[in-house]
Length: 361
Image (cartoon, rainbow, N blue to C red; front, side, top):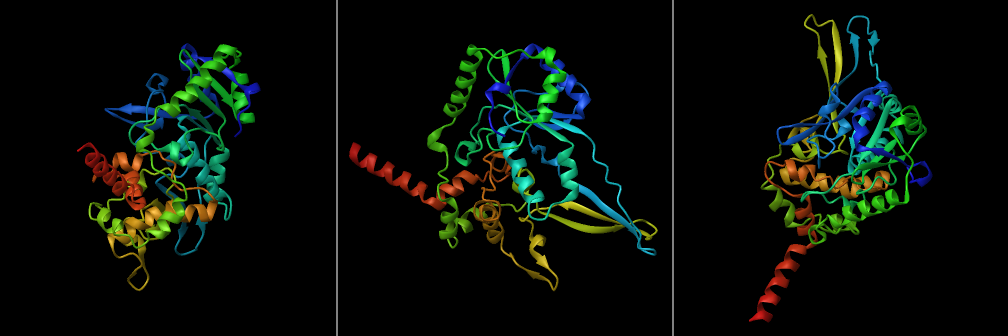
């Protein structure tokens, strides 16, 4: 969606609770909640549980568009009668950060462009997306992936924190409808609000440690040129192959399907579930052949798909810089550090340190 200043409104923070309550009449309300030190998207009954100030959730909101386990259909083995009881419901996902909005836009490209998935389409038609501004931590690199702001994504409303208020931009007719139905909660923008909005945008950019961000310029070419690099083997030695990196990713969509019979064996259900290219069995095909038998092959494949495959398929990187894969990796593998090693940045930095030390002596 593009930014339209003429459609912007102000939502005082004191009205935020009423706003969330008002969203419930548009569908099942889903929003971030806190559990111990982590955050996660969940269905909201008590709006006082909604967290406005969080950096990232464990899993992206993708799970409410493409469930990790879903039943596609069932059939009777005697009559071969097929049955599908898919019944999407209206839902409102509140509190989505810019990187996750970009992740959903990438899923839209995957599921709706070349071979549209009718089930995904029905879910998307019934889903309202409401974005929320955020501040980065040490794992975020969305400024490098160009996903730090919601421009170019699909959303209905986007709330930017400007201190005592939220600066609300409207991105769709449904967003207009929400604001109109709750108009008593909003007020018109002032010049002071505009100034605060611009300051908030600038402050987000300044919140990043620019020296730690990866250089993703011509990254597809870098990955291809370094296809035989020893970095893959070195990094893969630390990888546990657990698949955490892909399971928390907002853009990974690999899945597999199995037929599960009932106890009497007369009815079979086709179950799809999210899987990971990091699992050995994922590349196993009929005849017992593994396309990617080595862990390093599977490790490299994830980067190759994100930075070469996606641009080829949808003309976008398959990474939105949310930092979940690095933050949740039990082996502490950082996608940013791997990219820097492939670019030789680490060697350049060490070389620079030696030169500086030599100059100082």
